[in-house]
Image (cartoon, rainbow, N blue to C red):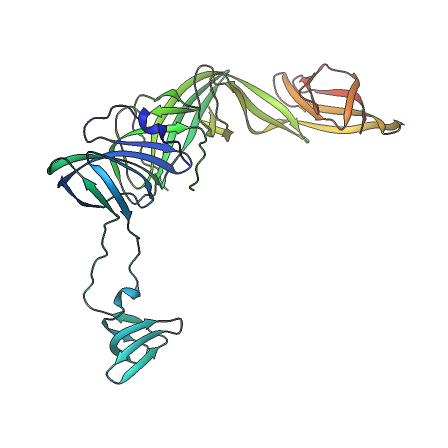
Length: 401
């Protein structure tokens, strides 16, 4: 169930303006004004709403809602011709009669010569097409006075989702980030000149392209909303059916490049902090001197939260890991010595992180380099490697199960 307190934080909208609050789950909260003819009491035929409207969430301001009856939405099919005169063409003949039944075996026609079962047919011709009603729901209401009136509708709908993508330029020790929100509208309806709010964070519910050119605009400023963050995009935007990308955030953050041994390959990545900004989770592509050097996903980053992005494997760094000694020194007590060797073809010195995952209850007895305990299973070593050289780390660990 979606917490509908969000309705009260939408703020004041201009007369007739549409507000769309987007969640990454594909759920949206829409607030819009429609001018409709009103009697003192009657039934409004509601149409032009998104296909995924959750009618049980509909609220209306301007009249007293007495009852709401959603109508089933059915595509056109042959059953609409039942009881009418049709012509059915097969490969060899045509049959004309009243369509009485549609079965798995074929079409049952009542003709002048009796009942005919047409098993295989090429086409069916019927009377003049009658369009399907576009009325989606009937709203029974009461109003203080008749006349044209602006009614404000609020409802939840499925079919609009958004995600964040980031393009980042790594220059020395700075990461310049440009974040965009990519909105996918599959509601069957265009939202024009809408005020857009994005909710960053996961909410609990019980419901389950080419990109257009990006216009330049001031980035949105995140504000706290309950346990989430909301981004009110400046100005108004069109959300046509399909995909559109909108600017969201710009930032320039201190960043550190790191190297980490993974198997025999040495990964290269970038580590940075969100500082005093908020970054919703999304995919980040990192460039250096205009060249894409790697991509990955970042989690939701509140203010001050740090994260890292592994971009790929270093071309001119590699390593090896071998066990040089192992013995059993007691019941369920073992001792091992490991050697990790790093080699570099780089022109400058680098420092490579070596993270060792250790079994059972363990303690390091000796090591040729200092180490840091990350958690109950991991220790981290920093191995410096000079240009064109190699360097080794050796350590002895004792453990028991």
